[in-house]
Image (cartoon, rainbow, N blue to C red):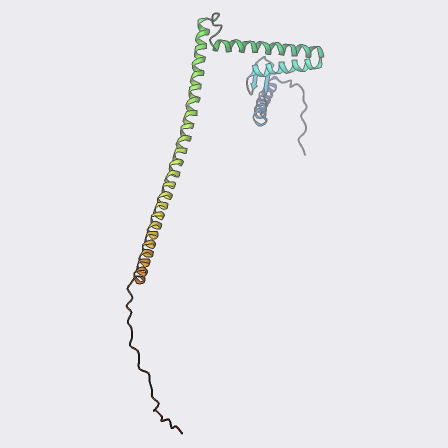
Amino acid sequence: MGRGKAVIQRIDNSTSRQVTFSKRRSGLLKKARELSILCDAEVGLIVFSSSGKLYDYASTSTNSVIERYKRVKEEHHQLMNPASVVKFWQREAASLRQQLQHLQEYHRQLMGEELSGLSIDDLQNLENQLEKSLKSVRMKKDQILTHEIKELNHKGHLTRQESLELQKKLDLMCQENTELKRKVDEKRQANEASRSSHGNDLHAPVHLQLSQPLPPKNDAPEKSITLG
């Protein structure tokens, strides 16, 4: 059989009531903490015992949770009332104008203007702020310069490599040109030698000799001619 559902009503026995309060309170605080962690929720819990003792839990802080609760309730109430909406946006506009005025004044003070109304502490704080800003600017400047130096060194290394490759190609071309010139010189010398040898044969003296005439051959015997 299933367990019967407990009746939710006030416990008359004070001891049992205190024990139940302690157990339920611990479980409630545990559930609130788990809810804030698991669901990334801003949780605030406030519990007063019957004796007036306070038990609370907040994922951020109790005051911030209460302030947020009041602000949301006020905004919700204002949205329900058109007149309140107008007043709300008027307050927001006034707050933004005040913030803008404060920022403009602070900017002028950083630029060295309107410093007559500042006290020693204000001037000291302004000086510290300027020193921090100057330190941040110098750090950023050093980072940029370091990055540019690395880039230039890398480009210089690539340029040296390209120069070495070009020098190798130039040396190879010079060697090829020298070899080609040597072959051309050898070919020209061979041609000149060949022309020289042919020229000597053409200009050599020609010796002519006259041969004696040969006697006519008369192998057939002479025949007598008889005249009748």
